[in-house]
Length: 393
Figure (cartoon, rainbow, N blue to C red):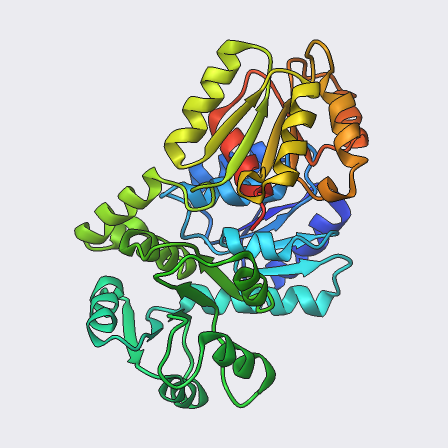
């Protein structure tokens, strides 16, 4: 069963007809909430998901489905008129198509989804020079439907990728014969090797420059910071679309531990611009337990002052702003416009929070320069989803 999430009825009809021709039963959803409800109640085999939905971003739907242990295994292919490929892939999508889409492209996507659904055994390549670490990661990831193959050098890795295919590669950046960066460069430039999606698993903090270099390889997922077996297992099982309930009990417990923290929020600085103490308390209690660093500004003027300070001290840089609209001294829309006037903050994610769900509120927020919008009272799951979607990767 295939769930097609698309609000353009003409395009949804094309997807439906082509899917029927290829033997899929098809469900249609035109809104994010309808999609979430159908996915949770009926657990489709695969999903084709549009980003531009009327009630919330399809990226938020993707994140929410991948955060739910009952739906995270479902392969989701994203379709969009805008290029959000890096975000979609990092959140767990199996692929990304830019509109307008040709019929042959859709047929190819459906064929890949079908092949993935029929696959019974997953193969993971582990590239790690430390023998004990190599064995530990191999034992960590192996299960009844996951075979692990190991390599201790870049040369061994290249030979394996020349002759075999893998669903995923776990790569340590420090190798004895070359760097992980050079290995990825070789894979990206030479067709002689298969190039599976890569999860970088490193024991050192990655600098902004390191991340930028790795981001050139769009198939890479980066796990920042110290090695964490729980987080690695969580990423790999998400990547392989494994059903959590079917994993060994020990692996299920480790995934639950990883879910308690949030890799995308860990150590990220969020500026909450809000004058209501109750809302400040609520937002802090949502974000801090998940690893985020929360700073408070009571109005738009204080928010601008705080951002000005962060320009002088890089270690205090703000990653994302939650901006209340109705505030004294300077309201959220005025503050957002002022932020966007500074080129240094042109790409700073700003999520507007408003007390009224009026029809024109969203448009006013977006026109002022907000990245996205959410009406109060805040839904915790929706809020976290928006924060994860817009948090710089």
